Length: 232
Image (cartoon, rainbow, N blue to C red; front, side, top):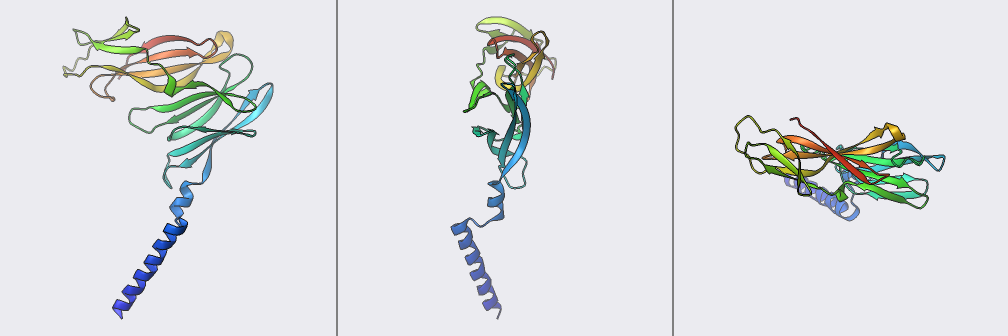
């Protein structure tokens, strides 16, 4: 009798496995492919208010990371590259022409604090990408100085120096990383926004931060300014 029950269980299990292979009949599969509304904002375009929505699908059922981001407004649907956490869209006037553009931000979830950042101009037939973190040009490189400090060079010219460490640790060569964090900043004289792009200056590892370089990008004039912030 025991062998017959065991055989019956095996038959049922085999049938269920076949159903999964043929029809993808799993709760997890259904959950991970369902779109969810992640963020919503309202942008002023040509004097009219436009509802803008951000959708995504969970990377893992029940998890907090999302992939397959899609920006939607009116009849326009635009895919956005990346998988991450806390994805949001917000409206800001970066160009000073009375229209608002969309700022997209999402965290990668890694210990380095990196993220995905875009600025999109809204059009009737699609978007114009005004900023893409993947296309940001890193104009800086770092070198160790004799006293242990870290010198930063921009286009071959030394522009600033971070103080040497005091813990006596032997370090590898420092480096300036890519885009770490991006945030809009209000430009009061012209009643519009610009972008602050943060890059980490690191020593022996990505988590060993000497300081940051902050590049201020004006999307209206395509100009770049920079400053430095030193903290650990």
